[in-house]
Image (cartoon, rainbow, N blue to C red; front, side, top):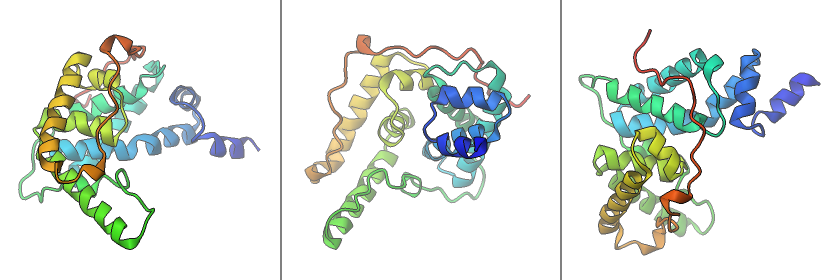
Length: 221
């Protein structure tokens, strides 16, 4: 009965509950964290490195470091940005490999922009628009591409992104604004796409997450 309860509650439990459960040796809890953030970290790694194999390694390395830091994590609302910050550091510290076939975000975006409703023609149109959007995001510079991926593909709010990229919330808002202005140039012919965000709240309206006390690791020990 206990095992069944653990299996069922994996998706329902918060990050905080899963971290504390993992500390007690409950492997299902750490597995739940892995599957919760695996795809998002892969998308982020691919957005930076353009190398699918490297992005897969970044996922593994990120969770290896998370497991090492498990006893020191205080994950009150801030585990997610901590994980993504580790992934960003790993991505930027990874040296480009020779003879690598660079990939686009389209391979990692999954169903982020997918819409299964409607007739076959409308589904095909949505797929084409989705491909066009992701190509446009790929064309952005690194610092602007990262904030777009974190916000629109991975669902982080501005305060979380500021923690990931280690800059003020105002800078994140500025980068998103610039990125969207660039994207509008490419997407002007497709207003039906509707990727415009709702108006962000003022920076002072964000509740800062409680910092995680464990340092963000960069190099292997």
